[in-house]
Amino acid sequence: MPKIISANIVAIFWAFIFGEVIGYIASALELMPYNALEIGITAALTAFIAVNGIFLISKVSQD
Image (cartoon, one colour):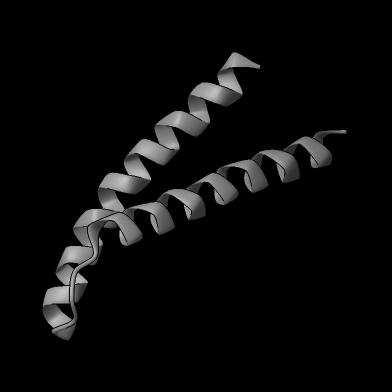
């Protein structure tokens, strides 16, 4: 179980960082206001769902 937890923490951390970078660039290109917390949380939730979804799909296919 600790492997799953560490994978989720790492994925959330990097998704937050990449989401901030992509969000900053996109907001500059689109001339929209930059809301750091909203972009970071959205990216982190997306990564959390993706990591767990991929894990569950691969777990089911191995059975």
